[in-house]
Length: 423
Image (cartoon, rainbow, N blue to C red; front, side, top):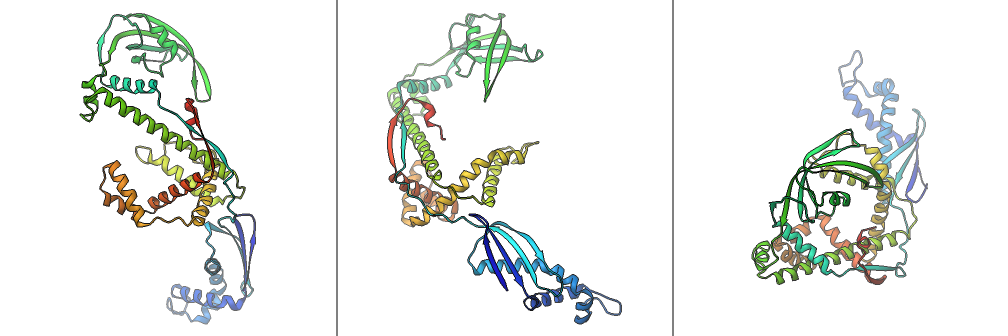
């Protein structure tokens, strides 16, 4: 048997196999025996046709039918003998066979691309940090006050702490509108023009508002007619010890204790956002160093996970009616290629660093998380030991720590919130 493997690109290989009649003979003999029980010809009972007649009358047909199975069996055997692990489903590109002649077939398949890990120690990155401000603290305090606020009817709008119920008519949309719409003037998402128009109004007043509304990457003009139906003043409770005890279920006895905890939570929030952004920047910088071709099978698998995630977020776990899967896959391709490339790089890094998670480390991590999550430690230990995904996550975390220790980091304090969005 002649076997050759040709490299098409970084991750595509093409195997060509030629088998002589002598090498095909045992495969065909097996196919004859398997086909015989179902054959019948005049003068013989079903399944009792002599083998020489089976070969004479049905041989070519049986051989043609057997060729595809032979191709698959031989291909798998050759892959195993060479310790090759194809990704996805191999494709038979060519089968050349006629009874009495050799069989030649060509199969293309994908493998993980071979590449050398690059030195990343020269990578220099900024890590954005942010200290929680007094304004952020006050915003969180006000949010708690809002949750516990009361309302009383008012004759006139005089400030931001008002909820105005209006009948809204869209004058640019054929008179379509919505009655009984509540507008909280303190809400940041409320259009500035609406807030200004409703200032000083009383029940029964009618206002027209025009503004340009930004929606995604485009803007459209809006022309509304607002009829005031009801006005309510929002009464915030004072941030005192009583409110602190109420909102914390007795955990904090004073307003000062509550505020200190809020500031601590804000600091942890910004630290987490900082690390998440930095991790994103770090991985982007590393992946950018590599130019190898990514296997289509891996891209397909990653995109499949995107679609499964989309399904899981739907109430019935099904894609919405009219969902264009083809268009979605095209839009998600760039992200899927990036993630596939990082998966391959990550595998090599973990292998190079010989990252393994020992039982003692699982015990330590479980103890820490048990205290944070209020979950029994032994349950967490069993979870980590039985879940391949959980163990992979621990290996990933260890790898990220190693990568961070070997790049040049400059901490930059900023109040620009956009810096904390993952790139």
